[in-house]
Image 1 (cartoon, rainbow, N blue to C red):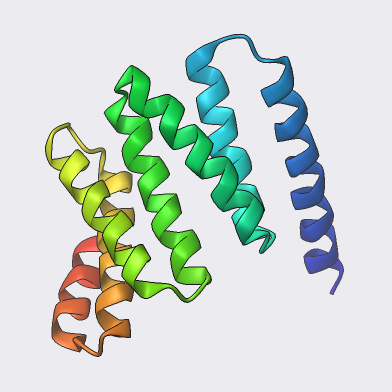
Image 2 (tube, rainbow, N blue to C red):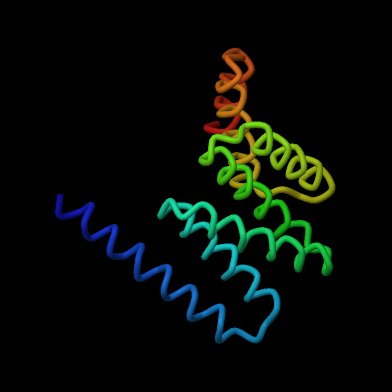
Length: 141
């Protein structure tokens, strides 16, 4: 009980810290990273609509500067948010876009693992367990 209560408090302070940093940051790249982290924290706190609106505005900004690494991370988060909202079609579309962008760049192993894990989750949702197992195996390898 104590640990979960403390963790919840830390997450709340993390959201307020991230919001304050986003407002104070002048550097464009760092601001995008902080906004992405803020959207992730909002997703963890189950504030899906707020996270989705932040993610959509961030996606528009990043698309202008053509930063594919950040774009892939945004699209993975978007897929997770839509899955949490039980909108599997949009989650799959976001994941497909993330995979397309990831094919154009070098994808670090952790990012590739996130892509594979989300693919496994969505395939399991569609009851395609063999493909889901394959994606999970790749993700955890």
